[in-house]
Length: 397
Figure 1 (cartoon, rainbow, N blue to C red):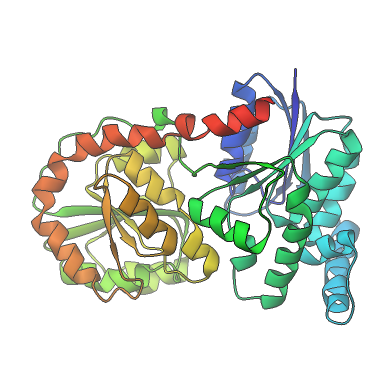
Figure 2: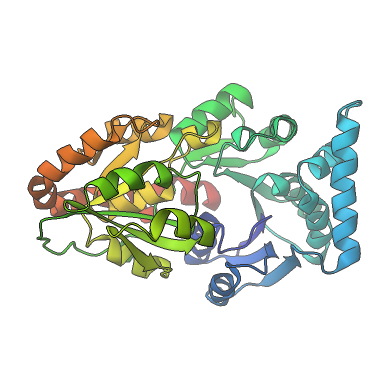
């Protein structure tokens, strides 16, 4: 039985794509081990349930907090030290990894607790070097999943440069590299490697087909909008559109699913009668519930290059549920919607034409509802089962 080792600097609750890959490997009949982190925050209960769903050959969980204190403070100091040194001198490969993420240091200790593996797959930049070293240690194949364009995340230019350099040095050494969107793949070929010696696959972050249900018939005067995220806070575009939706409360309603920032909720949500709070739902329950809405909002603000290149899982969930999508025109969302079959339209990232588009959708709500079944059936081509065919072929080699 082939043994897969997955390595991540996150936990399962904050990395749904990792969960899907683990279950895919199990479905292929492989044994699976996992090295990941644990967070004592909103994600803990969900993460505990996810861990119980998989029979791991070996499970190593590293505390992400300050306990044990010695390990934590050592990793923090190592990270700070090498970020400082990089300003004046070049770093070795392990030093570069430690500068990118303090968790890289902790992962290197953890892989020593694994006896063997046939395939090692890494997720998140802090796991790149540990994945590379684990493959050397076990003399096995290796892969890395580029779920986001990590050198384009956030505003920390030094960290972006460090991450890009680490990926340039190590990604060409992996046997398999997968990408979560076509735009991320294109950018990585420009900035990191031509990947001529690797097996590559674009695997969009879709979901298993069984998580979606036939859409019910919908009626009613109001156009029903939906948006969801693990965390609901400012900086995601909601603060831009809520005043517009509130202005048309007699025509539009918006339901939000996720964990609210209390301050954001008080300032932006509580005074809006047209906003419904859906709570925090298990993933499959949420996906079933999506089918009761008309339009899904994929309002990514294009806050950084990664946000421009990523194909959000919410957009794919809306499409798989058969909803019509109203999305901001980030590079990848615009590309994807133009290539799909009448599944949505884009608005400007500055939301200057959001109100006009929204009113057009309201006027066209009966037609949108009449095509729900057609969109739902067409979207089956995007299911996780279909999009991972290339990946399973690569893994099986």
